[in-house]
Length: 114
Length: 113
Image (cartoon, rainbow over all chains, first blue to last red; front, side, top):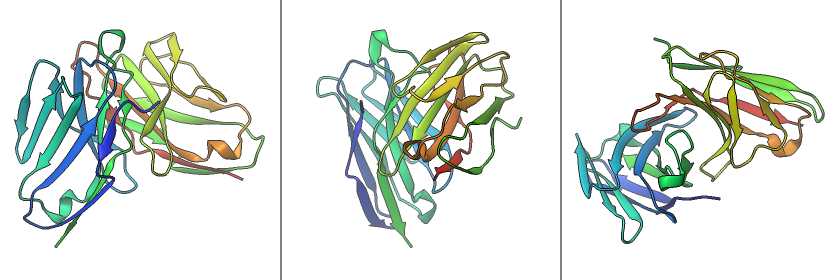
């Protein structure tokens, strides 16, 4: 079963704009991760946020986590055409889970138009 | 380091045929996993391994076998291919004790006719 569900399913913006993607999950977590997948390629890890963290930054990426609402958001600032990709959130299943058994959402397809 | 490598990149099978998807990593990671990705879906866990000689089932294990004789290799076997196994298969590895970010291979695209 899908643990994480991303929203929206697809997002199209202009270069320079900010892109926000949301993820909701169902059970407790130890941490939540975001991955990027370029068309026809494998997934690349972007950022991880632990359950006791509320916000984390990495370059142009900002991730927030609200464990009370079981939701997370990924913000990409000043987007570039190279950011065009699918973005997935992944969770580890909390105390009964593990970091090698991730559950992925269906992803958000981001298109950044030049 | 080559990271996680997968072969073949693309394969066409007929229903009932068997084949092995290869996965290797050179990062000395203890954990390895196999996922499948279907159109419009996220990744679903097929099998995983926490070390050489230890494997377990994920969310969708039916029709697949795995073994882990070495730390580096984690092959996925399709016993009798079915059209429902048409998918893109990804292998991933991670280090024990890390926070859990996985390193993914480039994928194998499988078409079962």
